[in-house]
Structure formats: structure tokens, C-alpha cells
Length: 165
Ligand SMILES: [Zn+2]
Image (tube, rainbow, N blue to C red; front, side):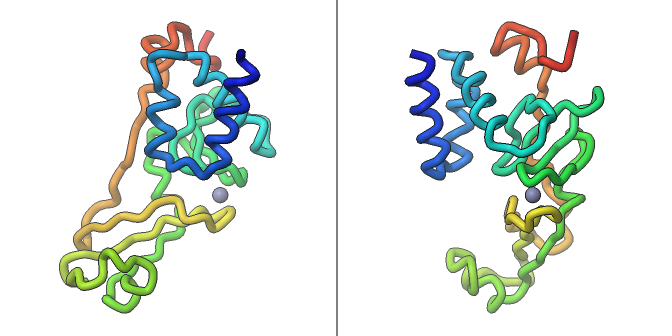
């Protein structure tokens, strides 16, 4: 039963399941067991040993390291405290001309670069594109998501986070 579940979930993760679709599965109220299986699969796939507490974003995890909760990329790059915006540690590429936007993002073609720019947030460790923001020039960096890890574990999974006694 559990094995079958694991294979299914593994296939879903392999099938480039969009993060937005993975998220409700992870936090699915019906089956907290699924969360453990997903964590197990993810943990097996990374080359480092810090315990994954929560998948945060495509490529990114909140992990427990020496009593701290930090954001870590699957490549091993560490972004620091999970309450700080990991985007501040990224390499940022700004596309603020019609040419540079249209090159990769046809759906933004024709948007006026005076009003909107695209910011690409890139992991300094593996150069994966982690996120793209379409924002007015000068707009502050968006903080995507600050998970309440303890509440998540206690309310949704009915136990304490593994790094808490
Ligand atoms: Zn990386």
C-alpha cells in the first residue's frame, strides 16, 4: 500500500509536476502519510544530509541545519534563514526591454517596459531559474511564501516538527 503510493508519487514528481499542483498534494489533509512519502522521495534525491522539513519552492527546501531552519537548493546552495527572502541571495537578471522580454516570454510581448520588467531569480549554485517576477520597475522584491512550519506540523500532521523536541 505504502509502496504503491510511493511509486505513484515518485512518478508524479518525475513527470515534472508543476509546483502549483504538487503543493495541494503535499498539504492534502486527507493523507498526512503522503507528506512523509514525498519528503522521503525528495530526501533520497538530494546529495546532502540535512533533514528536509518542508519543500518550499521548485528546487528549494527548508531544512534543519545545526538547529537553524535554512533554505537550501537541491544543488546544495544555502540561502540562509528561511524567514529571510531567499531571492536576495539569488543572481538576478532583469529583462526590461521589449526585445529581452520577447526573447523568452512571448506572453509579455508588447507589455510596456516602462511599466513592467521581468526579474529572473537564479540560484548562484546551479544557475537554475527559480522564479520570475513581472513587476513595475523599482517594485520591491516579492516575498513568495513564509511557511509556518510548526503550525503546519502540529495542525496538519498532528505532531511536532522533527527538529523540535
Ligand atoms: Zn541551486
